[in-house]
Length: 329
Image 1 (cartoon, helix red, strand yellow):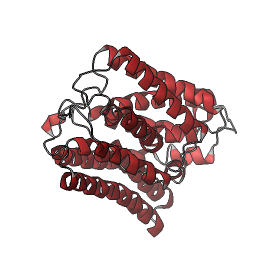
Image 2 (image 1 turned 30 degrees about the horizontal axis):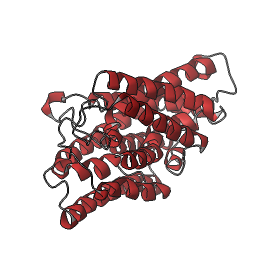
Image 3 (image 1 turned 90 degrees about the vertical axis):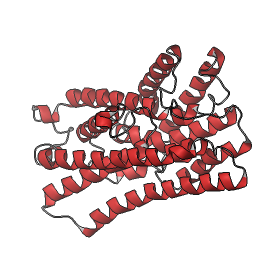
């Protein structure tokens, strides 16, 4: 249980956390890493403590999953594969790799919900940035914060506050979605919640790993964020984080019966869809055309998450063929 938790936590922090805090890191590179860690860590602690006190540390995301009472060594395979993939900077979905290992039958509904997340995030970003790029992104590029002109667009205090607040909102929404990918290991013992000592130990591990990812400036996955237009600008990062947070918030609920609110989903697909829609809209509005390499870049990012899905399915099939573990999930 604890080895699986540690490996899953390390994998999720190295892969998924950057999808949430990547723009925060890029736009605050000049600040000490421990200041950024302190802010993100305090929100993490608050979300975990609230969930633990409410007896629902996974925020209901495992309610639809039949967890085993005991874990075999096979359950260490998903986070181990994640460790390897993360080293290559591939933004795969930890939800597909870990949760489907416990509940193979949930794969179809989770894929459906995640694909809808990609499409909605893509469409929302494309629509919003098509409308605002000429007003915001173009102005952000032409009027850097280090050359203030007395207007709101170059007011560093305002935009720093706005970006930190939007990051805090996004981070809290992401945690309530993806904590299930980590705590699934500690809840697979027939109990509904952790002991107090177990919770304190898990919180300490999570905070330590989060500190490491801030200290290492995000690792390999961070390069995907840096490659996108103007993501190092704290003003642009504010909009990215806010839109991402709102989309995740929407998917927490059963909107119009289109998806199950408590069913886990891939936040990776939402993140990649958001960046794709934003990138294409910005480049089109600024240049009045799309270059082949811009379209190719979006396609490559999508191919990476599809690859992660293929790996997830292959692992589940391998597990069932060799051991039969989780076949009833």
